[in-house]
Each structure stands twice: as C-alpha cells, then as structure tokens.
Image 1: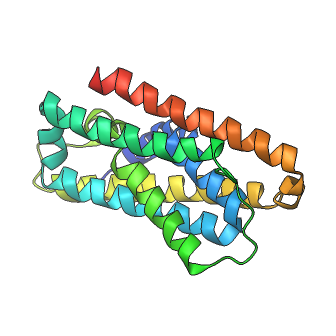
Image 2: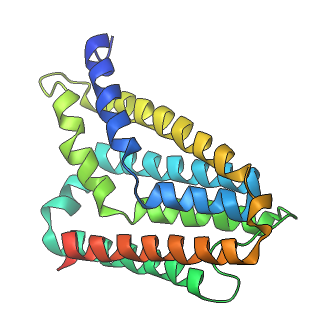
Length: 209
C-alpha cells in the first residue's frame, strides 16, 4: 500500500478541517450556484478540483516549493490572486452584481464559472502553502515513491473537497427563486462582494506586504 490506512485516515481528518474553513474557493462556488444554478455551480466545483490537480503536478515537479522559497515569486502570485478576487468582488457593487439569476444556463456562463473557479484556486498562495505545510506531515520521505504518495493524498483532498463544495452548490441552488427579490439579491451581492474583496486584502497582508 502506497500510504498506510491509518495515515490516510489522519490526513482525511486534517484535510476535512482545512476544507471546512471558508475561503475564496468556497465563496466563489456558492456564488456560481446562486447566480447560474446547480449546473454552473458544479462546473465551478470541477474548476477548483482541476486547479488542485495543477497544484499537485507543480508540487510533484518541485515548482511549488521553489515558488514558496522565493518571496518575490510568492508575492507575485499573491498580488495576482488578490487582484483577481478583488475584480470579482467589485462586480457585486456594479450593475446586476455578482449574484445574477441566469435561468438560461448558457455555455458562456458555464465556461466563466470554470475559468473563475480554476483561476481563483491557482492564484491562491494559501493553496501552495497548504501543499508544503500539510502534505509533508503525511509523506514518508525515506521511500522512493514520494510523488505517488503526494498524488494519493491529493486524490483524497480532491474527493473530500469536491463532495463538500458540491453539497454547498446544491444547497444554495435550491434557494435561487428566493433571490428573485431585488433587495435580497442586492444584499447578497454586496455581502459576497465585500467578502471576496476582504479575502483579497488578507492575501495581500499575508503574502505581499
């Protein structure tokens, strides 16, 4: 067995606790579920998991470690991620806002859902730090299959994360009709916009300033 069952169980607990802590990914997939329905929301969930797959590949090839060891590189990622989060959040205060009921479920909105979710995940330096801070505690570096161990741990993380975020999307998508009230939609727009901008500020404070 690549990783002992007890080690996997401990990692699953640690990963679950990490995932349950709300972050930009969670807010973004919920936003998509509210805006465009469960289809677009689930596509956003897929975008997040694809982002995690890319992070896994980067960690396997050592690029994540290289970025994390370079303050300038980590700052660049943080600034790009903060800018993207802030741009999404600002939409909550403009026009129809972040939350916009789209009953057509167009392919364009689905593509945007995937793109935004993947980029929010990829440009989040906290995910890079997660790979470097959490994963090593569950990897046996004395063995020759470190890359395989890393991929198994990521598979567990992705399954748990995907299940949690999919459940959130299905839950919020079920209340979309309630958002037909313009004042409620505006309040949620401002709230989600503020939270996303807040995450952008925190990224800058933690990694770029």
